[in-house]
Amino acid sequence: MVQSGIAILIDIGITVYIFYQTIQRINCFKRIEEMLKNIYEGNNKERLNEESFTREFKQMVNYINDISNGFENAVEEGIKSERLKTELITNVSHDIKTPLTSIINYVDLIKRENIENEKLKEYIEILEAKSHRLKRLTEDLVEASKASSGNVKLNLEALNIGELINQTTGEFEDKFKDKDLEIIADIPKEGIFIEADSRYMYRVIENIFSNVSKYALKGSRVYVDVSEKSEKVKIEVKNISEQKLNISESELMQRFVRGDKSRTTEGSGLRTFNIKKPYKLTGWGV
Image (cartoon, rainbow, N blue to C red; front, side, top):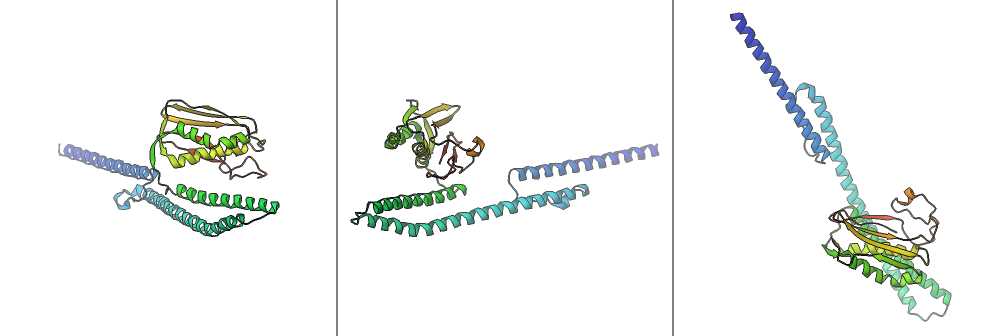
């Protein structure tokens, strides 16, 4: 009986020990799973305490901590690099704007002189147009830098997208007439409102319409369609290109790629616009 009682106690002890070890391992797995979840979600601040894990998990804990450290260092380096890039672009843009402003002012002064040479007048007009274009590109560069670093402050408001498109169409009426372009618009009469910054949204629409006025085939039709589906607003602008596209569709859809490889026209290549929340606008611009 005594031996039987001792055997039972030993069995109970072994069972308790196994149960305890199992609970420990389950807790280790849970903490490792939680840490991996944090890393997956971008939280790399926390570290696992190696001493609180059983022997067989210690090497795994070291690997996970090293991975977390690597991600944290990469994020910090990325933020630092992005900040330096933004500062560099801002400083260079400022340095460019100072002499550029002088060029624009001197061109304006030259235009006021009594110049009879027609060829010289033509050169001055070209110089004025190119200097103003360089000024716009410099300003766009600063805006793009701000957008890429998340420093753009948006003034969100209820915006009637149909009215904005009609307004932009009216502003481009003369340019469309110069190329004999017929605008066929399908915009619902009832107002379609989106939450957006009117200034930046106008620039998006203006950019697309500017491309149409530059690159559409003379005497062709331009289709502008606005539709709403599943709480998303879709804007489509379709036209026929004046020049034959000499690159593949996949290459054309890449950012800042131009269909006119000879670069005989103005433009910086394609840029994509995508506003996901609460509505979506898709389109392309040069």
